[in-house]
Length: 111
Image (cartoon, rainbow, N blue to C red; front, side):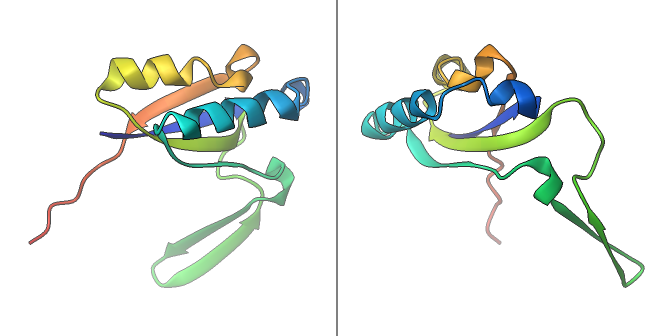
Protein backbone atom coordinates (compact mmCIF):
# COMPACT_ATOMS: atom_id res chain seq x y z
CA UNK A 1 0.00 0.00 0.00
CA UNK A 2 1.17 3.53 -0.72
CA UNK A 3 1.43 6.16 2.00
CA UNK A 4 2.26 9.84 1.81
CA UNK A 5 4.42 11.07 4.66
CA UNK A 6 4.00 14.83 4.91
CA UNK A 7 6.81 16.60 6.75
CA UNK A 8 5.66 19.59 8.82
CA UNK A 9 7.65 21.95 10.98
CA UNK A 10 8.43 25.50 11.96
CA UNK A 11 10.82 26.68 9.26
CA UNK A 12 13.36 28.12 11.72
CA UNK A 13 13.49 24.85 13.64
CA UNK A 14 13.74 22.73 10.50
CA UNK A 15 16.93 24.59 9.61
CA UNK A 16 18.53 22.90 12.64
CA UNK A 17 18.33 19.51 10.90
CA UNK A 18 21.43 19.10 8.72
CA UNK A 19 20.73 18.51 5.03
CA UNK A 20 23.13 15.57 5.23
CA UNK A 21 20.84 13.80 7.75
CA UNK A 22 17.91 14.13 5.34
CA UNK A 23 19.99 13.03 2.35
CA UNK A 24 21.31 10.00 4.26
CA UNK A 25 17.78 8.96 5.24
CA UNK A 26 16.58 9.48 1.68
CA UNK A 27 19.35 7.26 0.34
CA UNK A 28 18.60 4.52 2.90
CA UNK A 29 14.85 4.46 2.27
CA UNK A 30 15.34 4.44 -1.51
CA UNK A 31 17.81 1.54 -1.28
CA UNK A 32 15.30 -0.38 0.87
CA UNK A 33 12.74 -0.13 -1.94
CA UNK A 34 10.17 1.65 0.23
CA UNK A 35 10.58 5.15 -1.24
CA UNK A 36 8.70 5.91 -4.46
CA UNK A 37 9.35 9.68 -4.44
CA UNK A 38 10.55 12.39 -2.07
CA UNK A 39 11.14 16.11 -2.24
CA UNK A 40 11.84 19.02 0.05
CA UNK A 41 9.84 22.18 -0.56
CA UNK A 42 10.99 25.78 -0.85
CA UNK A 43 10.09 28.06 2.11
CA UNK A 44 6.40 28.79 2.67
CA UNK A 45 6.71 32.41 1.48
CA UNK A 46 7.26 31.04 -2.04
CA UNK A 47 3.84 29.30 -2.06
CA UNK A 48 0.92 30.40 -4.22
CA UNK A 49 -2.63 29.32 -3.44
CA UNK A 50 -5.18 29.06 -6.26
CA UNK A 51 -8.95 28.77 -5.92
CA UNK A 52 -11.73 28.67 -8.49
CA UNK A 53 -15.18 29.68 -7.23
CA UNK A 54 -18.13 30.09 -9.55
CA UNK A 55 -15.74 30.17 -12.49
CA UNK A 56 -13.57 32.95 -11.04
CA UNK A 57 -9.89 32.34 -10.38
CA UNK A 58 -8.38 33.68 -7.17
CA UNK A 59 -4.60 33.66 -6.72
CA UNK A 60 -2.98 34.60 -3.41
CA UNK A 61 0.59 34.56 -2.20
CA UNK A 62 1.40 32.15 0.57
CA UNK A 63 -0.05 28.91 1.87
CA UNK A 64 -3.71 27.99 2.17
CA UNK A 65 -3.83 28.48 5.95
CA UNK A 66 -1.84 30.36 8.55
CA UNK A 67 -0.24 27.80 10.85
CA UNK A 68 2.77 27.52 13.10
CA UNK A 69 4.02 24.47 11.23
CA UNK A 70 4.36 24.52 7.47
CA UNK A 71 4.55 21.73 4.94
CA UNK A 72 8.27 21.29 4.31
CA UNK A 73 8.39 18.20 2.11
CA UNK A 74 7.12 14.69 1.54
CA UNK A 75 7.99 11.04 1.08
CA UNK A 76 5.76 8.77 -0.99
CA UNK A 77 6.43 5.32 0.38
CA UNK A 78 5.35 1.74 -0.14
CA UNK A 79 4.60 -0.23 3.02
CA UNK A 80 2.73 -3.44 3.81
CA UNK A 81 0.51 -1.72 6.41
CA UNK A 82 0.19 1.41 8.53
CA UNK A 83 2.48 0.09 11.28
CA UNK A 84 5.31 -0.37 8.79
CA UNK A 85 4.65 3.10 7.34
CA UNK A 86 4.87 4.56 10.84
CA UNK A 87 8.14 2.70 11.50
CA UNK A 88 9.58 4.30 8.35
CA UNK A 89 8.16 7.75 9.16
CA UNK A 90 9.64 7.96 12.66
CA UNK A 91 13.08 7.81 11.05
CA UNK A 92 12.54 10.94 8.92
CA UNK A 93 14.99 13.42 10.50
CA UNK A 94 12.66 16.47 10.79
CA UNK A 95 10.37 14.46 13.09
CA UNK A 96 12.81 15.55 15.83
CA UNK A 97 11.61 19.18 15.57
CA UNK A 98 8.31 18.89 13.69
CA UNK A 99 5.79 16.24 12.79
CA UNK A 100 5.12 13.69 10.09
CA UNK A 101 1.57 13.12 8.88
CA UNK A 102 1.16 9.61 7.45
CA UNK A 103 -1.79 9.18 5.09
CA UNK A 104 -2.76 6.21 2.93
CA UNK A 105 -3.12 6.98 -0.77
CA UNK A 106 -6.68 6.70 -2.07
CA UNK A 107 -7.01 4.27 -4.95
CA UNK A 108 -9.66 5.35 -7.44
CA UNK A 109 -11.82 2.65 -8.93
CA UNK A 110 -11.82 2.45 -12.69
CA UNK A 111 -15.22 2.34 -14.33
